[in-house]
Image 1 (cartoon, helix red, strand yellow):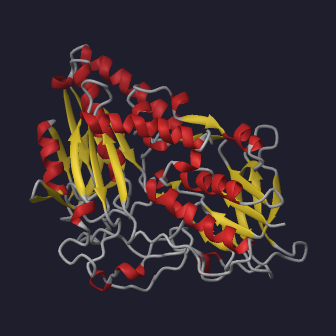
Image 2 (spheres, rainbow, N blue to C red; image 1 turned 90 degrees about the vertical axis):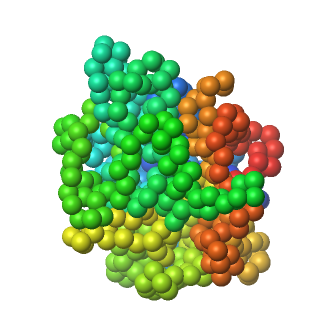
Image 3 (cartoon, helix red, strand yellow; image 1 turned 30 degrees about the vertical axis):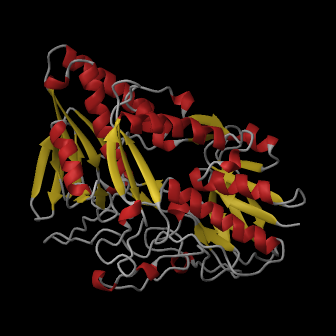
Length: 484
């Protein structure tokens, strides 16, 4: 009997757990550890955050589903990993700390044969003073955060209806943030709900981002082929902003947020400020913060993880300067170099470097988007890792399955207003996610698989995908047919 231990139950962790249970015989154990009792379809938090969707539509409890599927579930936080065991444990094990009411804080150990780290990000609001729900801005990173954002937005709209003129700032709260697409999407949903309420003329809407130029999205920008012509995501995004009267502040790193004022440094090194009445700013990400120890109890965390706390895998972390970067730097199997039974999927793995060109201000401040690893790539990577683990449990040692982001395509649909008749969405595809300039010398990507469109049809597709992935996550009949 083999035990597959999965840390985290987000998109990557839940995908891994469901496929592992489907593919492994009942004699093998699948165990999931997650500090949250609920699964959350994070992409739809945007709609919760503008009051267009109830939180119950984007979450559901994990324990009943896992019990039905015979997956052992622990509502707990992983504290430390011991890959070689110790005097009391022959196998590798993980120390966990319960987050359940009644047993909160209690620690225990879980042994494993294979470990898949899908812990996702720590939302590092502390990186910028005053950032986040405990500071002076709101967030849509979690379902509870999105509920709070909607409540504050409702109050702001009431002020607009009363005749006040307000400034709304949406974007990234640090120079190294990722997932700019979420801020982009929230910006246009704000625009839409304010137009619906008849108060858009009273509101100034500003998009503040660490992207050097609009349309970068942390992937170095895109070149689209449309109707025989080529355009860029920069021009495409700038057009969307002009049409909706959104002012952009680019290349920005928030240095401090105080009540009603955001202080930020831009790529020119000048520190500026902008007043606000309502602000939704995304935090940077860190790793989950688990320590790693060898059999003798020596701390090997820095060997296993990068400085941000993400787990190193089969990537080239010595790529050096931007000019030396290559598609070959990126991981393929997501197996750790030190232990052949430990993998990291989704946000938990350490990327070798950014995808966007790195930029530093004259003051030495890094203002460069971190590479996105959420959503579709997380699911694809998690499934690939599980296929490798299943093969090894079944006696097939090699080769490992591969899911390089330099071979992987991805699609993103960013809602620009939730309405079946008057809504729209910006739909983007890219292939590959990480550009490969050897294979595609012009733009690093295949123009046949890279596109951008906006319209009502995209909004309908976004709605369809919402229900489709909730169906898949709940393991409804034939759920595995739905692609990651």
